[in-house]
Amino acid sequence: MKNKMQVAISIGIMCVLLTGAIVVQINTISKGAQIVGTSYAEQSLKDAVLKWKENYENMYNTLEKTKNDLEKVRQETTKENDSSNELEEKLANANKLLGLTELTGSGVIVTLADNDTIDVSIVGNANDYVVHDGDLMEIVNELKNAGAEAISINGQRITSITAISCQGTVITVNGEKINSPFVIKAIGNSESLSAISRPGGYLELLKNYVITNIEKSSNVTVEKYNGVISSKYMKNVQ
Image (cartoon, one colour):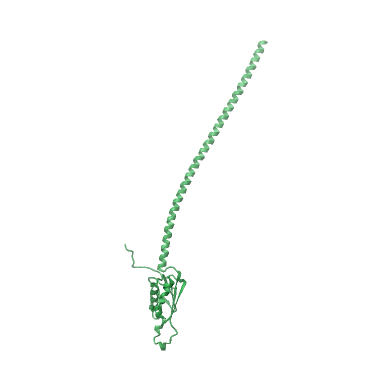
């Protein structure tokens, strides 16, 4: 009986020890699993962070390259715009000199008109008291010599190919018929241009025959040439 009791106690102690060992083992395994799980999660997070960092660096490099490319395009465009603006300015100046642009500025307005008040029976030759094409050419030349930058007669722009001629009793400018009064507008220094009315000048001489007037103005408008300027025989020197 005593031996049985000892055996039972021994078995009970062994069970307690075994149970304790099992509990300890289970706790150890759980802690290990937690450690393994935590390590795995941390590693996954690190991998994700590294991946995002790599993507960010790639995107940043792409952005920097794009910015550099855009700056190059901007610089090239600016150069092209400067060149284009320069060409446009040259073209505009050329059109001014050719007479293809309406212009405004300070200058003078000269008016010549046939003298209808004369008595033919007294003067004898009425032809002396009308404005002729030669009169217009003389005034235009004097205005040019005085520094006129643009001239028109009755709306017809005077250009390098303009012809002032007389067909019978009709004067033509640029092939267009014009009649008295003849309004000659010139842009330039108004003081210099008005000096064509000086004593002994051609305009002063005309006063003895036809009606003349000259006035200075700060706002003279000279019309553009409406014809076509072309060349058949001129060539650039090679």
